[in-house]
Length: 387
Ligand SMILES: *Cc1c(COP(=O)(O)O)cnc(C)c1O
Image (tube, rainbow, N blue to C red; front, side, top):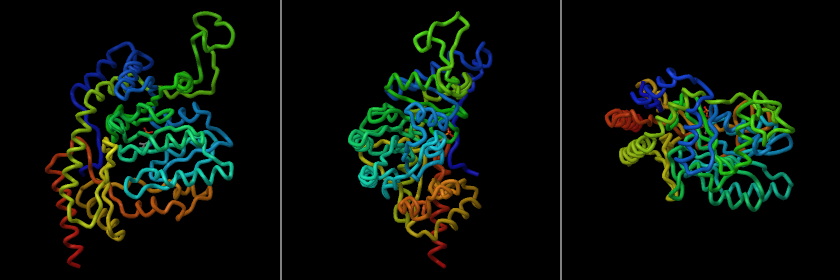
């Protein structure tokens, strides 16, 4: 099976992990701070906090911004469930903003209209989570303008997006947001096996994220109440978690980030080739906004005819092509239906979902494999036209 996504590890990565295994530190050593410095410097943010995965990154980012009961989080329905669940973890209410039918990202006009209505009802969101689908940035400048007008915080879900750029600058620099999160799951752009990070330019938020990642415990006098009782002393000042990344993971991350630009370049090349190869077929290839240079986590084809989706998907799986679908709209999941969401609530995301297939896209995909996949799809359409 040719997978839709997979990691790309070389001998340097393996040696970086091995060196940690032979060192004195498996966790809470020097490698996490090094990886955080690497991330912050790559994206051009002041601070980075590495954690167990992007889901915990979202969780502490929300808590850091004081999302809680009686508050509201809005995100895109075209995302992995984690982008919305982080609101529920905090006891907040979750709602969605429909997607733009070209970019498949949160639609800014829909956001604006929904904000106007919410303002009239006194139900404005406290945090908005734009998801950079497939590594293509949302319209952050405009979302940021709306945030100033209506007074909400922004956390960018960049799980797909490390290495992507917006307005000629790296996603994750938080120029238009309070924080950005990235995922280092093996199918994402670079990997630490499991792993995630929050980037921010806000020092107060940064200090809070450090505490939340580590049980809410502090060891420096400045953050304590009263006086430290000795060198052994620590205080728990928040209710935090154990969301620490290990040094093994961090060392792998520092090794992987050196290859990030190369990875993104190869993905972009494969995307360009797919675009060319699909010309003339009854489907739409991904649109790319002029403001964005995506990291291209996914290559999604949208079929003109909804009825083609399942048979073409099944055919490709039979032919050992590991296609997938991103995403089942979050509001149609049973857990969210239980909260009152229903089909028809976000029609663009639902229509999109019924028409799409994610094709293999990763740095180990060869040109020959790509051609093979496209030829399978072409031959499927030929047979479809004949019957
Ligand atoms: C993968 C993903 C996450 C969660 O990442 P983990 O590191 O697996 O927790 C969150 N949001 C989006 C959009 C994702 O694709």
